[in-house]
Image (cartoon, rainbow, N blue to C red):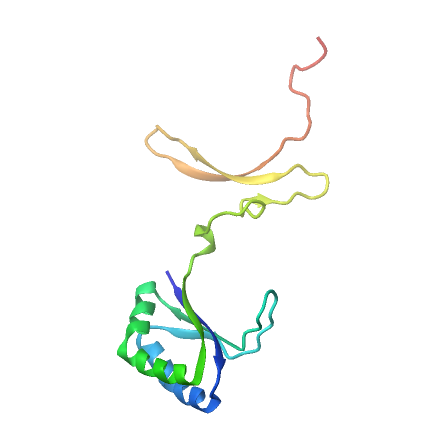
Length: 155
């Protein structure tokens, strides 16, 4: 599962910081990482304070990210970065949306009905169980329209 190293830093010595970037990028690549965002314009949508510089580095796994962070190569580059900036850096384990915990009202199996239509949901049914093989079938279930039941008349 991909893992991300995210930094929120304030640069105190721009020249020294820029001088460390090529070395830092080389250490990231040696451990299978890649910078997926950094140094661009930030549009703060919520909260304070406004970050000055954000970077996001992707690694193929948490183990790879930790090996990079604890490596001697990175520590040497880190010393230079820490002399030219301060802030915080954290690790986030990535989760695919399909494995994330569902949120009420945001269930991917629910679809919004058109005006006047009953709600629709997506369900999974196993058919053929106990007959030597089963198959999973996905069906869209709509609430039935209001129809009288067969034989339901006046008594």
